[in-house]
Image (cartoon, rainbow, N blue to C red; front, side, top):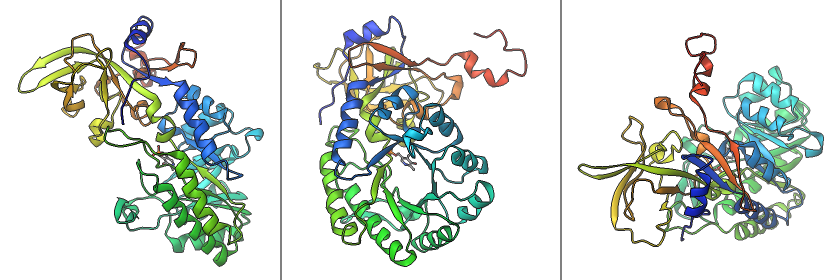
Length: 425
Ligand SMILES: *Cc1c(COP(=O)(O)O)cnc(C)c1O
């Protein structure tokens, strides 16, 4: 696929007068169009709901946009639960607005999740007991499934659930349902996340078939009242140019087909489908914008930027490819080979290695694509680096700051009990 920035050089030159680089910028129009498409793709399912995975892009301004479409949120920690509460997802009119999918869960998080009325997604059989002792057993609950082995689509191995720490075995699912039912649970859900960043329209239908068949078996063996199935995250985006984006309409239709083949004949045609997409909802609609501030000619050609892995960790952590556009040079030939680096004292702090790009001048702005999910969120403070601002490019072309850049004072805030830093601004 072709990748075009959603902002022009002229717009960035205007923005930097107020908000210096580096910053993450998000495209409201793209987010909205994509959210509407997802709703449409699953509109055939009466109870369908997307619970946006907060961890992907934990910004309340962006999540408020999704809330307008009736989405809930999927939280994985105390802080995310607190955010969800403050954003109004625990309110009655949101009706089960929060999913709490965590693992190795601390007791106080279960207590708080229950207080907010979140749907708890139990990661393990032993958690039944733990939940009962700490927060009590709710009437509606979800259990997370791990089929083990490899997750395959025809002969291609997509991921290896057998090596993943999440979820319960089938036997444990059955036992958990029986036990929870005996403890008063009235409504059950099933959840599984078996492959990450899948760029194929087959993932959801194949996963759905497996979960639908499991639902039928669980209903037979435990007579549990299964009211929802959570397909979780995992629909990916094409980071590289050789891939094509997933077609969410086709995916919706693929899931519908197996729904009608497996659930409807088993009398489970009223089951609601939930998703917990993160990357798919936000990934392509966010970018990291950074300025080339240095060049270096040694054994290789380097361009040094004002952003670093602390702003976008995926290349350093996973060797992930993020496409880069040199703004204003979209039509220039890519005839120079660069390593694009940040300033961390870590040799893996490179946004790109041996990347063919147009000749870069100091002062050029680089648009690092597909940083809208698991981008800013994974940021960290190594080397005392500060996290960037987040900006929203609104539909009307205005730019709104939706998170300010961190300052040294923020970084030092956890030393506020001693006074050597008290005059740092
Ligand atoms: C991370 C996560 C998601 C979102 O995953 P994406 O790959 O961003 O779609 C959804 N559900 C759970 C439980 C997760 O841990």
